[in-house]
Image (cartoon, rainbow over all chains, first blue to last red; front, side, top):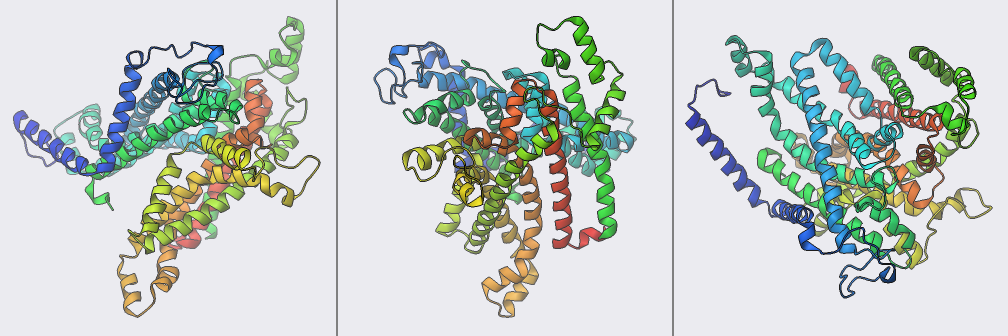
Length: 297
Length: 315
């Protein structure tokens, strides 16, 4: 059953779906900045995946006799850090940790946020009241502070930081999904499903969930960047990833001690974070415009 | 207006109750025994049991919560394990320093953001508009702690124009002495909110100036500047106020990171050191203070909102 209430064959539905995707892609690729964002992100992800093929150094191998070599040095084109570790290698391996945290944290937050939003919005009543009051309490904390508070309980560490920023992200998605569900739950196609005897679970997951995806995809794309910054921030404070892990926040924090003599040790991880967050923002903006051209200004 | 305020104040009660439950829960379920942290690893079982009884840790959890909240309401926020001082005066002193930084950054972000947004909207697609919007995008994507470090390097270490850490010169107090110390942390902290406010102001004004009443104002012969200032700005500012309110939370949290970079003696450094030392009463006090302030600031923003849009108070 489509949202218009007309019964379509599976083949017709597939053609319509492909047509929509093609239209989406056509609109997306017209936005050059979004394409550039996508390409930068793709390059970073590929570098992270194929790190051992790109560089032959070990990210944690120290060579004290080669400490703080400036960028452009033969064999170490981005230089070395305070214990002689190759900067390029650590940045590439750092992408694995930093970018992975961003995506995994968003995935966890999305999963729980969507569930909360779907149930609160669809069932309403006391379920909605209880779930939304819990969300209100979580939102009563500034985001980073809530993450820090959770780490205060769990103890510092990479996994703990990821869990903390995931929990912080849940209210954001729960609210977006709930809002969309509220606007959908009394539509004719949902009423029709109910009249046909469809179960609540079928209506929620088969008919309402797909319709909440457009705003969620855009929000999640933009949010990955925020999660990467938050995770790096926690590591910078000493509450996330711990040295000697090659992670951009840790690298920034360690490089600070040598700011006067080797500023590039702090500069480079920050540039990497900036580029990834920028690319995600460009991509997110492009996706938003492609999914809903009315929003384009 | 009065009924709206009363409604909002009532709404605060469950939220603040939830905040205290969460803060208490986070610290209560944290791994590690507070008695062990206080007495150290060599404490005997008898001394641990005695201290647990003294701290009320042997009581049912709901009793512990009500004891704690009762004490908090009477101004007894416990004693810092690490610093061996009362938590409330310690947190209040440090929170003052954080508020100075946050308020200064907020003023900077609002003034720069509004100005850039208004000029960009009135001169859409001009060089200023494009430059400002690129700068806003960059400001939005920069990690606050990294920007802080780079400002330290350029304006502190390289050019030597401004001090790179602390709040006062040795032995000095007063605002005039503090001002140069405040500049770099405030710029670092204000960059993202300024970017968000500029983008929001621009898009909000662009939306408003397409409305019929603006066209009417122009048709009556009002100049562009007067139309924007007297007619468009007030309506355009409604969504901007919401964004500003949301940014206050960012500023409070971002201050933690900026304080670490610039060794600013606010709650950020105190909190991080407290977490690492597992100083639960101290961390609990700081979280409670910041969350409560955040909730109150949001209330203030909601009230401000009614000033800009009187329709809200009648709903």
